[in-house]
Length: 76
Image (tube, rainbow, N blue to C red; front, side, top):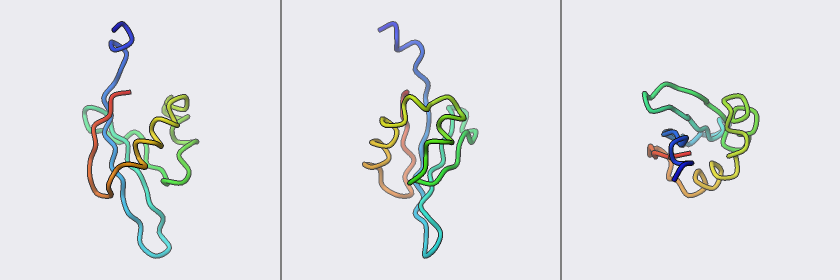
């Protein structure tokens, strides 16, 4: 219960690429400010930059289940 006080709300948007353009992910905060924009196959550097490197596996598993073009709210 104490850990819940430190959880933040993020919004993920998975974007489908076309032809030579790869798939991308937008990560936004609770005010919908863009925090990170990264390739779906290379999230490590961007997640580390915003301080979520230790939650990379959780985020990758969420993205694996998401549909393209849908915004999903995530508590991390």
